Image 1 (cartoon, one colour):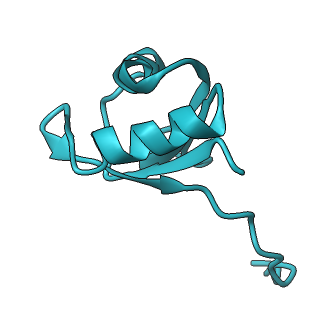
Image 2: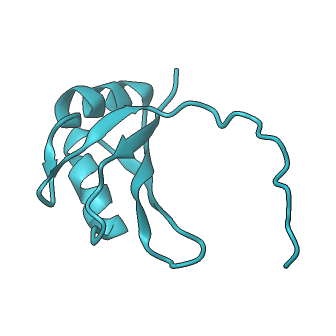
Amino acid sequence: MNNKLFVGSLPFRLTEQEFADHFAQAGQVLSAKIILDKATGRSKGFGFVEMGTPEEAEKAISMLNGSDLGGRAVSVDFAKPMEPRAPRQGGSY
């Protein structure tokens, strides 16, 4: 079973510490990462949390999916493996 979660609808000003603290309600948080835009350095509004055990991950989903975090209702589900993508076509100007 998986203990990595995808979390969407994050507030854009949320810190990774606040993110981890919110999920600590459900158990041990091994890591909490907010995904940033490479060009601007701003949050993309989603992230990933790795819980200590698959049971804690399930508890986090049932407890925190739809919960309020910084004024937004977050969506929480198991993270899916990244699907292979075609190479990007680089353009020259």
